Length: 155
Image 1 (cartoon, rainbow, N blue to C red):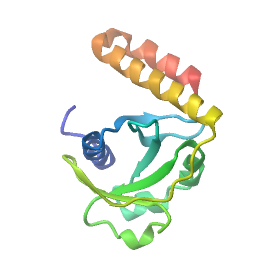
Image 2 (cartoon, one colour):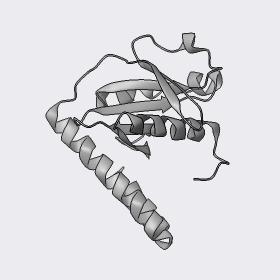
Image 3 (tube, rainbow, N blue to C red):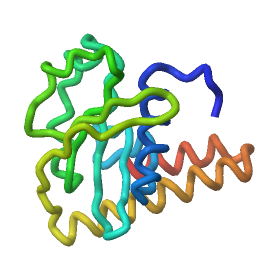
Image 4 (tube, one colour):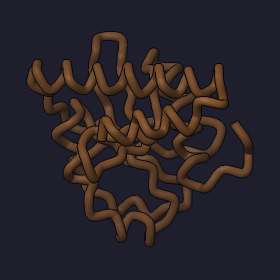
């Protein structure tokens, strides 16, 4: 992954690295439903699903009007921000992760809202397909355009 990533992408990279240390596997930029795109979705060893929204600035946070729509697609929701972010802006009833491009630290775990079994199954399928398509694109870069089309059809 190149180091010329946008600030939010750097945060996502650090978050994904940290979550792996907790035995969570993750994907970035997953579309749980039309019109929504989560920054990081992670699946834990017991099948728990976490969504992490990465905010690189106050303006980035203030312009996000969709984040509450992500709550119905995860068991726990987190914000990931850098050490300079004004965390008092973030809702207290959500998780909080401080991150940079290399690692992260979970400061607060938000409340759990367990997904219904049918929703969990649907999200696990989306997660698996998203991860498989990304892996296939890495193995065969000439398919990137076709894979993008497949992902768009699934949205």
